[in-house]
Image (cartoon, rainbow, N blue to C red; front, side, top):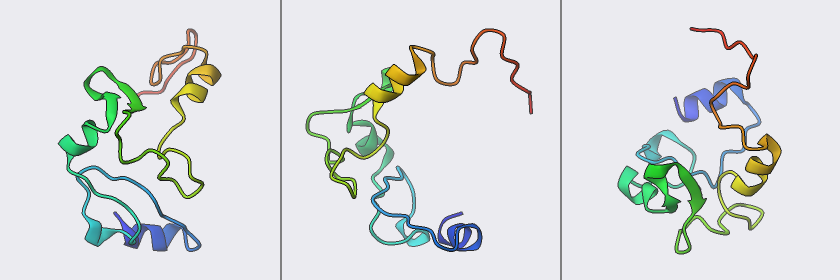
Amino acid sequence: MGLGTLEAYFPDFVFARNVLAGGRASRYPTGNEFPGEAEFARAFVGFEAADYRLAVGSPYRSGDTDGRDLGVDTTTLQRKTKGVEIGQPEEGVRVPRR
């Protein structure tokens, strides 16, 4: 977990501008954020309702290395998945059980 795993499996890794809620900063490279879980949840429009768009006052807006918002682009994700719920297989798709 953390820096040891990154160094072992991804020798040329770049791990920056990530937000790991409840994570330990001592386990990861500098340049990342580690808010508490409640603080992290407040950064979204409706975390409890699975609405993961960043809230207006979110500290993660424009925080990526390219100046865009941190995290997934939910608008593009919804457009590309055409309304398929994430985590739910499309009809006829078999998902192996572990």
